[in-house]
Image (cartoon, rainbow, N blue to C red):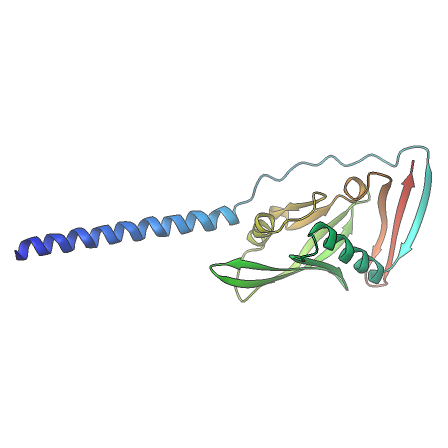
Length: 195
């Protein structure tokens, strides 16, 4: 009788160990799916402004861009803001991540750089994910996996940057090209071409 009880305990113990190993492997696979990068999509930069049409230069400020961004994000997100994007001395991205039953705040500080084709790259300069120490590439992978960004914002986790395809993504009615984006002096210039 005692031998049967010992064998039963061995079987139960080994079964419990097996179940724990399967759970740990499952959790690791789940976490890894958030932290691995999808292949960075290649984009084709637009050519110069089309010939013909009326060209306008618009000068604006951070405050006006923040107002416009807020309205656009409300439209994109259906009135429920799952993330914020705003301009101060840098471009700031904020969201809350839900993981393991907790809400974890994420804030990223990005430096805007105008590309040759008149779009904007946002280069990561610092970030904070709650009190966790997470590699920057992983943060971009998490954002890519959990935040529903507009189609014209591309994430490049390995380069720690966002690419805003303003020329192709914002309007079908006219072409847009950023010519100046100085947040310190609060001077932003955008060129519009209406064919």
